[in-house]
Image (tube, rainbow, N blue to C red; front, side, top):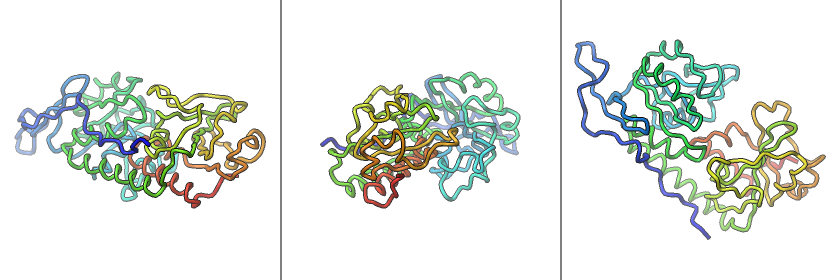
Length: 329
């Protein structure tokens, strides 16, 4: 059986920090002495960042998880003010309440940055994302007028380890980043030991997108990769390996193709009327339903491509397999 432990993801080759401090910082202290800086090289070029940033703004929720895991509480972040916790709880440790953060957007979408609100927080460093959508790359000029801005590569939801390592490097805390990733690898190993040989157990991931669409999460989705690390088999409908195809969109009429020994179901947060129990209608044709092996889990966490989300997925899977999670039937 293949090993479940992945190598720890160190900062990417495109992100290298110059170890020599320079005196060409953009901001000085009260006596006029230039602040020490470090040179960060990313895919788009180089950026001079404070050697010891004190007011960090994070414009990507997986980045929020990364900085808070490293002990840094940002002065600003993106979120959804309409929600009680601004949609940030899955990206925060228990020691950092969502209410303590300043949200500088109306949604958590990467393009939705209120520049006036962001500037008012007086960041000395902005950490964002260079995703396939390139939304923040288009805002780079405006962001750089506020503070030195580093946009880190994000090719997809399974890149959260790499992103955490890159954030740690930007903050000058590579050792802390390595420690966090080693701790997570140990949690995966501990879960594998508790679960035993799972290669003969087929596990399905079904996201309820709306009342007319379901999404089968593949091995390249965030929770799909974790199942792979734990050694589970996947139904044929969810064995896709393309990084840019983390799910397959289907109608409910094809729900039977997601049948497996165990099925985890989670609803898109915008699907307010999503069912929470699955025993009637099309669900009655699923053998996992008849065997009480369908479990409802929280998509806020199972879709949170971050360290805290990954820990929650591990905990839920172990609880379900050990009989400590109540079936949703």
